[in-house]
Every structure is written in structure tokens, then in C-alpha cells.
Image (cartoon, rainbow, N blue to C red):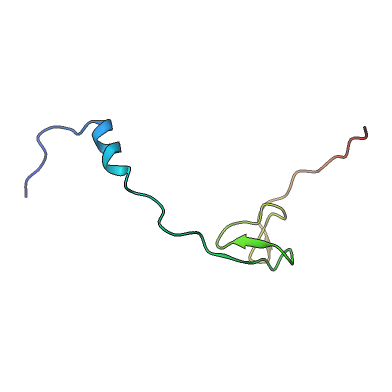
Length: 67
């Protein structure tokens, strides 16, 4: 099987990759954590920090500053 004699330049590689693009929209479903909202499947809900009913990361404490 033939092998390339020289290395391809970054520009040549990037030109080829310009055609690699997302062809579909991500799967969205009705969130069970926050009713009435939608969420992207297989991703952590950033408003609650939960994934599939489990707390994945703690949200930073929100402080209210008076005006």
C-alpha cells in the first residue's frame, strides 16, 4: 500500500476538513428535572447540575446584591 512521501500542510488538511460538518440537529427532549423546559440528550443540565436524576456537579452559590 502506498505511503505519502511528504507531509501534508496544515492548510491542505484544513481545506479537506471544511466539508466535515454537522448534518443533523442534536436530540432534544422534554426535561424531567425542570418541567416545561427542554434539554439536550446525554448532557448535564446546566441550570440544575443534574444528569439522569443524579447531582453531577455543585452549582456556585448565587449571591444577591441589592441595588
